[in-house]
Image (cartoon, rainbow, N blue to C red; front, side, top):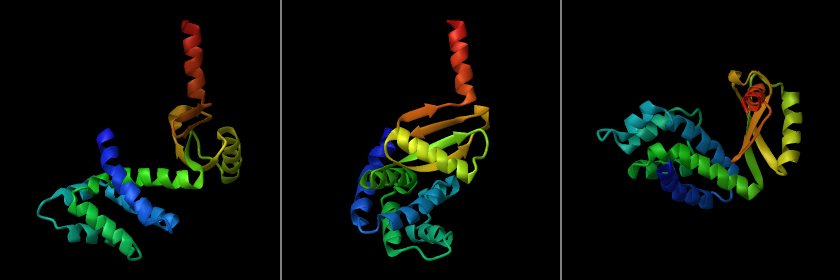
Length: 176
């Protein structure tokens, strides 16, 4: 994976510098395009030597309700011409990291065994922001194997209060 990160970094940094006046707007279309680019069938299409960059760009643009901004079209065209379309999800990840660093926030993923209500998520987010000492952009993913509780991942930090983690701790303590 280090190779993908190495390839993606210059593209993410260049896009970040070019979009410094509208980082939020660029983030929106970049996340959508990256989600589309993650499709393995579309990556196969982009890698096909018989398919032109314009055709792939047309397929990607067709997935949007509104036309893609000119900056997005130019960026995608550059990626397709250089054979880097498959790196787009990593570019979006690194762009998000740069945008977070600029705004002083971080992404937080809350894994929960059950769906979390909006009001409960707001209080969890406030407690997590206090715990980690920075503004967090919280997303929730359901993971039933946790049994109960939550596991929070912020960058390389993990806060695990799940039932599964507690059972593992008890297992280790009893085996010792």
